[in-house]
Image 1 (cartoon, rainbow, N blue to C red):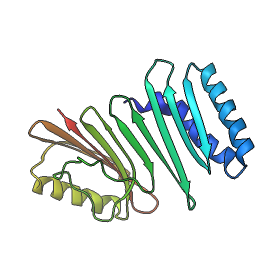
Image 2 (image 1 turned 180 degrees about the horizontal axis):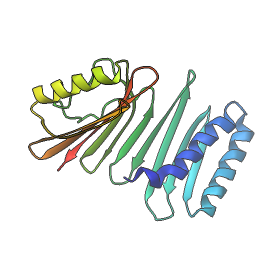
Image 3 (image 1 turned 180 degrees about the vertical axis):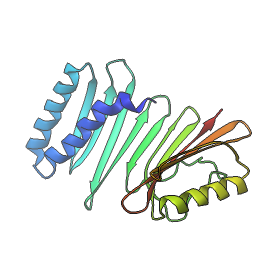
Image 4 (image 1 turned 90 degrees about the vertical axis):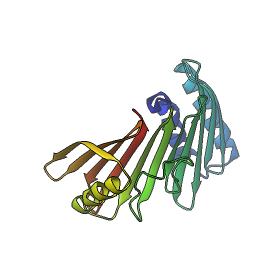
Length: 194
């Protein structure tokens, strides 16, 4: 799944959540029709359904690829789930969980708060925030990856703002990217076949 392929429909879903929240059934129906017509102008064949601040979009994109996007808005938080016809999935939002088959030997920083996860063709990408600063997070991943049997193949550092750690194990690769934030750090984990 190329996430950029879903960018326009996903942006449409986010816009619909903001525009139609609490406006009533007639406004929801008008927004559905307007969204479907706007998508059609871009070559997408979509069915848009709004209900209670939630959005469901299904259909095909301009290239004929299946699109299924579902957003949920509840208690001040919003989530988005995208599912491709090829089994690829992406989740965004506060209640994001690790993919069910996420490898047990990929270290997970205690207390990390997941922001997004994506799976496609054996590759998994997870993004999270950490309370730890950049140096502590790097130290953890260097040690934990070694303990889990990963072999370091490359590291890169950029002036205390980003750390990139690359590993191999058996027939897989793991990339750990850590970025300094105002408070704590941001983590990207990418694991997949060589």
